[in-house]
Length: 228
Figure 1 (tube, rainbow, N blue to C red):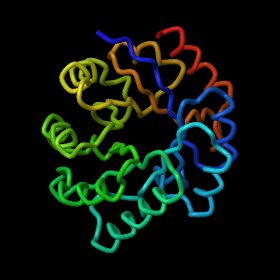
Figure 2 (figure 1 turned 120 degrees about the vertical axis):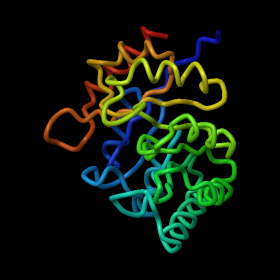
Figure 3 (figure 1 turned 45 degrees about the vertical axis):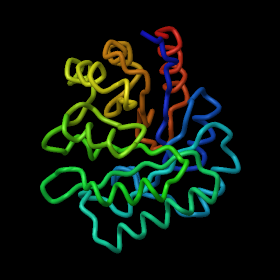
């Protein structure tokens, strides 16, 4: 089995956090705004500034509002336009997720958004954890050509679903990057490495501040480097 390098993606909700995370050892930045709503699309000016300042791979959240992941045609068109803007702005990847009212992946919507992304990488975010059939959903993402899925393997924290994530990695990890997210911290990263997954997503927020904790990122980076 190939021993993949361990990748640390840090979710950042402002430009200062993105710069701090990049300097502290993050391999990739997921740029969002509005932590309270779980991450929304940043303003275009913020995206452009981040691209100018951040030299490591930069992925942008494409999510027009908080709440569920069932979107109107107007919301989907906004998402498509934001993806096109990111592509024109030299962004490396986009992050989105669209579900039907029955909590299945919206195949048609995701196909259109994936098409708009062109050469950019696409990550399907934790909307996957609301799907009624995880196996069916992962197979559909592979069929759509989506490169990566962010999942905790169920509800809430990835550390609660180690066994399930290990199975998913064994079955689907060769065709789809399974990136672990949901409560990923330096205190449980060793446990999460046991899944065989090699990409990890954390906001690295440990206190009252919504800015990243640089020491936490360094601890995560050290754990992943020693665990490689």
